[in-house]
Length: 396
Image: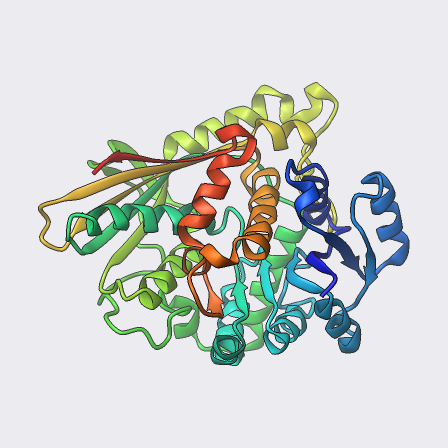
């Protein structure tokens, strides 16, 4: 293999952010990387903007399988931002990585795509040792690693977790054209009739063969607006929870931690603060960089919003006996879906490429917690001198 990391989809909005992050990484001399995508012209322009930081340009297209196979053969790890993955041949990249035993990470929030990858490639990836890591951004790293950290605190006391509850108390950012396309893909899938209604309503859709499923569990576990006594806040359903909760349940299932229920919501205060961030700058018009309210593919939030954004989630785990609880928080700086997510994906790639001896053994179609766990927590907590993300145990 020629490179520790190949970044596929590098010329898209989020792809460029990941490329910029890798190009300026303080450990830049310790890894080799390349940028890849369909357009040679766009890749050359990106390479120029990065002052030649990437060591190679690779032209590859999911419509041309041999080009993807060749790209993967050059990589220890493939990072891809070329979504929606169910629409743009994400399975072609996953298949090539699985067959060649190379690691893979994406930003997929498409549970239907992830389920297809589980069904098709999990067992083969276990044989080849390929770690296939979906949702390696704000969906679902904070929820997934936060749940893992909270449960570990109980397990250190010899207790088993019976319930985890998460509340986002800050979530300020925006969305891109790719996010819009993902929502459109889900609507088109529903209209196609490919799956029945039970598929879309299944809270364990990413853990189909799990033992110990919690009876009565709903998709997010937080289905209504209510005052939560534990968090002392008014919480409501959260638009990120459907994918976060499903990924957390896959982590719980494959780590043998079921039965354990999971619920995730967002506080009213978080939504009001996010709205105020937008309005205080006149939706960007006051600073000469308006927020695109209906972004096209390749568009996303302006730089001021990417830098002003933030997120914070508090998670409480309760033991099976009900006698003990533990509370942790995960917080981060930067627009959650873009600036923060691009850094997370970059660190996931470096974790897979450079920290292999410390990672949990074995391959498969995995979650961030299953594939990377505490190693990724430590890596993320060290970014920007500890100012980017923090994982804290509030009570144990």
